[in-house]
Length: 281
Ligand code: FE
Ligand code: FE
Image (cartoon, rainbow, N blue to C red; front, top):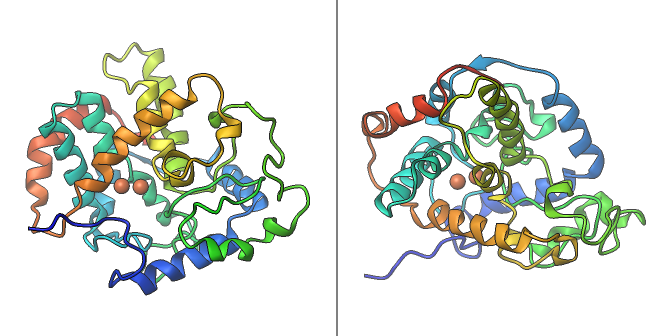
């Protein structure tokens, strides 16, 4: 039996949906847009809900940027976590696999103009898709690189040089990435972890978990080799750990039948241990 091919953008039967997604994403994700989303989702809390409730909201969400599968994201959450458990990865990583895409619930508070809408055929360019760094030149290693010139910042002299607004060696963590479910969940978890730490909660996600979540869509960096000029000491090792995470994110995908009850019976208690109380979303 042939093994499945992932991230196939040329002859996937989802190609049209995916190409439309990237065309919109490339045309709309700019420095100004990213700043406006940090302002919208940073200080303002839209809801209090448990991690389990947030995950349940992915039951009906299908990712428009995914050329591989058309299952709801909740099935993908389970497949990722189960693959990690089966490979003997630690519990914190299984939890990370389970929740890594939960930031897509932003669609509850988004609107089509911001590229955050969960409805069928609604724009999701502010939610999902491979991320890149705004404020400097767009790398040619991106998916559909012919769309790079559609980006308004690509014509702005401040943003179109290789290093743009950044200092070489500033560190991957200090770059401004496109806004999506990765950065949003990272910000939510950062706040939550500070609260848990203040109470000495025994189950907290380590820094690596937060980095895996924050950078898992940054394919131009961790697969394409872009932004090496920005890396600080430790970033090359971090990149390897993100790549390790991504192996599970990608290669666990399959369109098989799935049963949500199995997810909760196998991972519900573990999830509740790491997230005992509602989080501010
Ligand atoms: Fe994702
Ligand atoms: Fe994923």
